[in-house]
Image 1 (cartoon, rainbow, N blue to C red):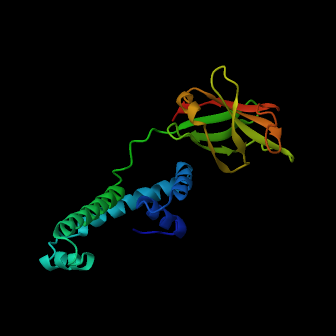
Image 2: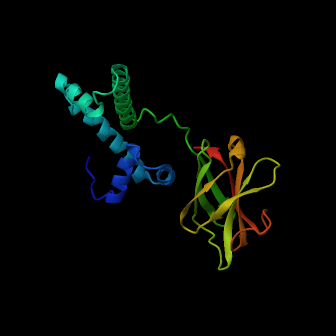
Image 3: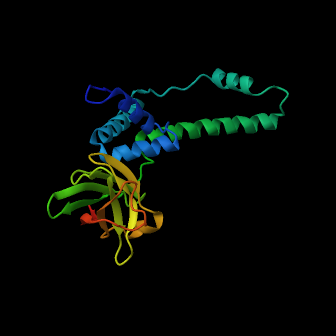
Length: 227
């Protein structure tokens, strides 16, 4: 696969490791947060999936010589092992090897990627500034990617994002950073009611609301809708 200048070298390697399932859980979560908001990374992941899938087309079918299996047995099992145990372990090794090959193929072909629902979106706007923030919400995982693009706070103040479902009290999702995409999360018990809920931004003291509820002016709001 070509990694032209349009793709940073580190991102290209990271996307390849992600497709092959080589990242640990924390690295995977961090990478997926970026994929939600970075189109270039989405393109890289798709390109690597196609690249690894195409590799299988170049592999000719080959029957290994019988001596290969004999050599494997000789290396793995001593003659002092009972015959039944050597036979059982031999089959176990074959099964594990086949399972590994199948798992690798599944990862490379993307068969483990389920049909994921499209992210919900919310465009928060104010009467004076128009659109203030761009927000995407994964309805399945509750992951939120939020970018504050206007109404930046004054020194000593911050902007806090709130989720409002029906008549329930607002729930803080976290603080926004001016001009940056931040990763937040919706509590698991609130995810079923995301569609149609309201997101709002309030002006708060540095560090966020001290009461757990909005204390300053509500600067912008908008509904969560399917994209």
